[in-house]
Length: 116
Image (cartoon, rainbow, N blue to C red; front, side, top):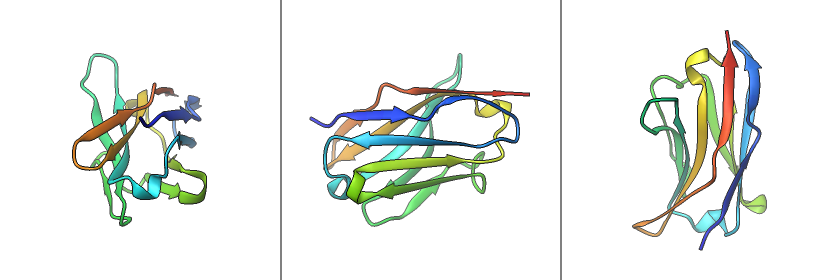
């Protein structure tokens, strides 16, 4: 079992920045992929950013150029640096890990609110 614990959410004004952290109980260097998803009120959960074990990254079009995913294997932690935040970035942000081919794990989520 892999446990993921997010932190770093909060309230920020539009144009501000936040950095989310996701601490994993296992060795993230062995995970197939890790990423961040978000769910806005009344909407489906969507992919924000992901990173494979080889370091390849993928971003949602809406955040490309503003957000950056990174990881620290020594700390078993994945980060999401969010800059130039917009009110539409508001939502619950979830950390995700894919271990092997089919095992998915999720964190409990951290709230991000961007005020206009």
